[in-house]
Image (cartoon, rainbow, N blue to C red; front, top):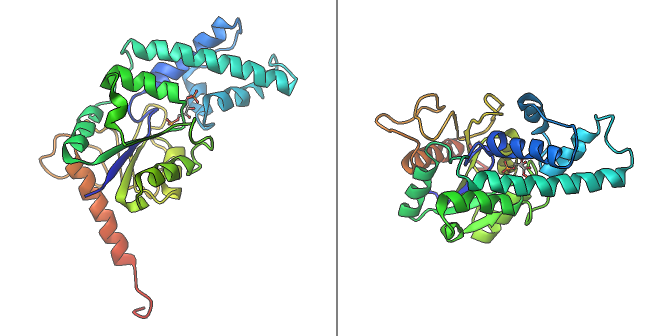
Length: 263
Ligand code: XBP
C-alpha cells in the first residue's frame, strides 16, 4: 500500500485554469484598463509557462503595447497578478469551479485507509486555500499532511523542488508515494523527484505525452479510457486501483533489475 497521495491542484483537482484563472486574468486586464484579453487557445499555449506572474511577463514579450522598460513590466505583472488572484478567489468562492469527477471520492478513500494526503502545486497559496476551503470546508488543511505551493517552493514545475519538499516533510522515499497530475510539467516534476505519477487528462492537456506515468486516463470518475486498463467491476478510480497500478509498476521495475553478478 502506498503511504501518501500527492495532488497537483490546477487542472487535476478542478478545471481551475479554464474556469478560474483564465476568467480572472481577463477580468484583471479589464479592471486595470488594459485592452489585453486571452482566448482559450492562447491560454492553452501560455500554460507552458508555469506561474501566473511569469505567464504575464512571457505574454508581454510579444505585445507591442507592453511597457518597454523591464522594471515597468515587472510592476505591471505584479499588479495584474495580485488583481487576478483576488478575482480568482471570488470566482472559486461561488463554488462554480467544482472538484473534478472522482476527486472527492478518492480523497475520502485515502482518509478512510489512512493514506496521507498532500498538495504539491505551482500555484500561489491563497489560490489553494480559496479552492479547498469552498469544497472541503474551513478545516480543510487538517485533512492534508503536507501542503507545498509556490510560496514554499519558488522553483516551479517541471522543477522537482515542490515534490522533494513534500517527500522530505513526509519523511518518505519517492516510491512510497504517488502523484496525481494533469500536465506535462507536473509529470516531469514528479518523475524527476522519483515519484510514480498518475495522469488525469484535463481541458488544456487532452493528449500531451505522459511518458513514464503509472497510468493515464480521462477522469477519476470513469473507468473507460485508462491505460493500463482498470480492473473489472470498478466504477471509478478508487484507492484499490491506484494501489494496483503502483504495485504493477513496482514489480515490473523489480523484474528489470538484475543484481550485479547475475547478469
Ligand atoms: C499551475 C500554475 C499556476 C496557475 C496560476 O500550477 O502554473 O501558475 O496557472 O496560479 P499547478 P498563480 O498545476 O502546479 O497547480 O497565478 O498563483 O501562479
